[in-house]
Length: 303
Image (cartoon, rainbow, N blue to C red; front, top):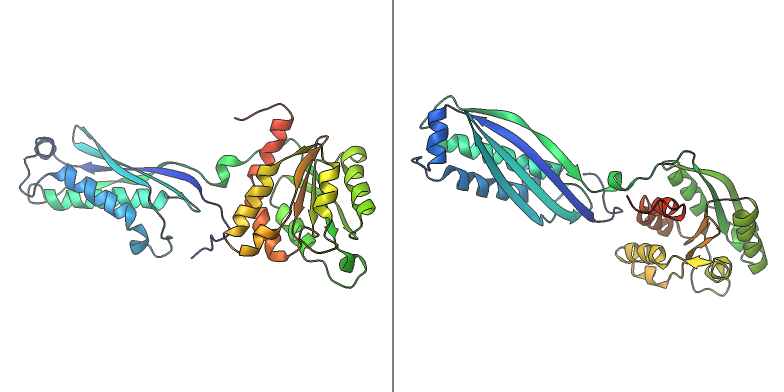
């Protein structure tokens, strides 16, 4: 199975459709509820809803997820019954296969109930109609990549005693997003060094996005959040809270992180932890939603 443990849960919906083909006399018996095996539409609806809930039992690589809503509807026309399934969940992956499975099982139940009446019933055209939710719905595009800096804040790395890992993780992660990492530096845990670099990148170099990694804990030299708080003009507490909340679901130590996020001029400064695992978790929490801050800052508002 695909590992979705790093993903965030979001509202996801999917709609699928399929068609049953039968003689009009058979269709009319369904409409009149005059079929020996019982109510075809009610049975198919129940079977389709159950199939959506049991999809992971039938499809090997589908995740077991909470189905928050599932329903089956029918449209009867000349010679056809169109079946539509709609499924919703708040989870880490979509419900496309749940919707398609629901339609397929509903149609199979209809064929089973109608075969004593007509032996050559067929069905087909089963497929996805629409889906919403996930990262693809929250992706902002830019005419040019956002000018981005990565600052590794660590005495030991600055002195060459330890190899940087977290900064390299950030750089590799950002390759998949509309940003350009034009600055990568290692700084010591010194107030003046950090303050001068943050203000210089934001004010003079006109960087739009600055990530720091390291110095966010409770150690005696952990001062990155304090320096960041002193240079930003507007705090963005929701972003820091989102990172801590995402991390807390994976490790209780996330609550100890003092990350600060804020705006200076037109630059967003984001503190990330120094651990490799913590950086990965925070980046998954940030993207792609954090990118929408820039259209808002530029006066574009929400779509």
